[in-house]
Image 1 (cartoon, rainbow, N blue to C red):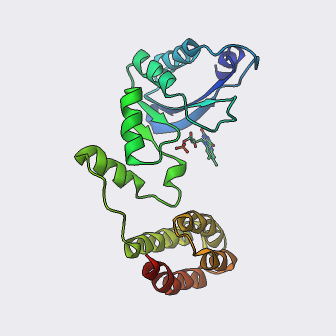
Image 2 (cartoon, protein in one colour):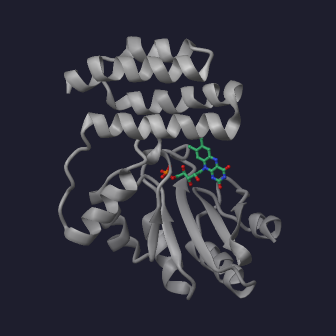
Image 3 (cartoon, protein in one colour):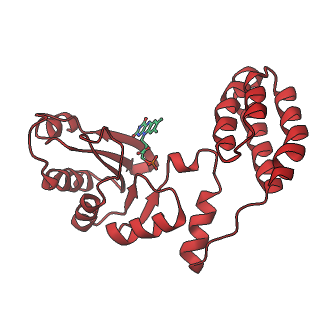
Length: 219
Ligand SMILES: Cc1cc2nc3c(=O)[nH]c(=O)nc-3n(C[C@H](O)[C@H](O)[C@H](O)COP(=O)(O)O)c2cc1C
């Protein structure tokens, strides 16, 4: 079905429709773009969403993007709103949501039932708490203390080692450490050192030893 839909897909708005299908098995439709010069027809995506609903799809998470912007820049939240209004199943808005304020704005603009956050949660998994707190209270939560961040990273690394095993765990941890350290300016030397370590024990020990003296004190 996605292929047939893709034949009619106009250019510019490239819309991923992530489908949470019956039984909560997630799947994704990436609608191929046809004629790059064709005019975007929002109705096309509305029709696809309605077909998905008719097929028994239980919820949609939609990331609207302009192809012309090479999938960067603001997502097409107005289009998401049109889709939300056309179906009865829950719709989640996705794309460029990186703060509690942005979350509230997107919920208002799209009228969606919820949001999905991707990249902004990398190295900042507590963003979900921050958003929920803001939506519930209207107040911005204080920045997490560095000690709390350290404990979150520690628990995260331990889970990664458990889940992936030592060798892969250390490598996967490097990626997350690099995201965590995006918010620790001036700590590039420590980050780089952590990237080169080969064992879980040394990676975790180095993080814990150095984090308190370098990162917590610098805060
Ligand atoms: C590195 C990366 C990989 C992604 N992989 C997939 C994927 O496999 N399937 C999918 O449907 N979306 C994928 N996406 C899109 C995300 O699910 C999400 O729609 C997109 O990042 C926009 O949300 P955000 O601005 O909150 O990150 C990927 C995004 C990134 C940055």
